[in-house]
Image (cartoon, rainbow, N blue to C red; front, side, top):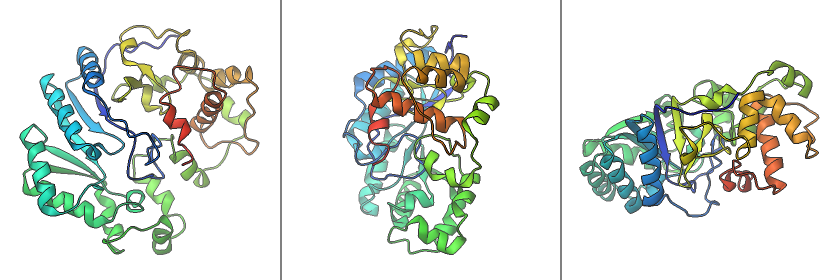
Length: 328
């Protein structure tokens, strides 16, 4: 079978991968260690042009932290509007908050160019790096200028407010209050995708399967790669198939069958699944973990990291920072 992305629904633009935080659930391994690269108008224009032709009428903007380059972010918002695409929201972790007045001024400018909703990240993961008082400040400022707040997720507010909002707090502090299985509670109450740092963070709360058991239970292709209900395109002109972080298809290669010669890893995953990728990796002497895996995505991520580090030049193992900064 050949992957063929003919139509897209709602998705997002990733403006940057560098971030003030290094959240333990981050799908894209964003952190302060990434190069300080931000999407250019040229790449954003190409992304928007292609996804518009594939049926997209709404997008959101995220990162990394998009507000780390405010003037560039304004330019991207204006570009979205020029394509007559509705801007659903911009995501933010609120780390850029300095004071109420300056934040109101910034958000007034975004309101004037079309921003109507701000997704504000709220979780113990973010609170490890960002005092909750900054989050509260951004929320108050947004509301004062008429921007709606999409709190993701507000269920954690009561937990966070049991600690001092003026400083950061480690996950160990949350566990000391709510118990050792608090991370397991977070996983069941948050939209966690098994990729990036989440693979390591939530591993202790799952039963491990042997390699043989995992492969036997996943005999089919990874059809998640064709899911277009919530997609992302990034600052390097990459489309991330099925939100499988660390895999990339160039946006210009959408709307036509994906060439298995150009994208052998994506192609074998779609056609033969994790079994096919494992067999593919064996030709490069890949050795699996003896202790097993909690999900096929963990094995897939391990194989892709192995292939990236072999420096074999696979185009689809991108962006490179996903693999370079995964442990930083």
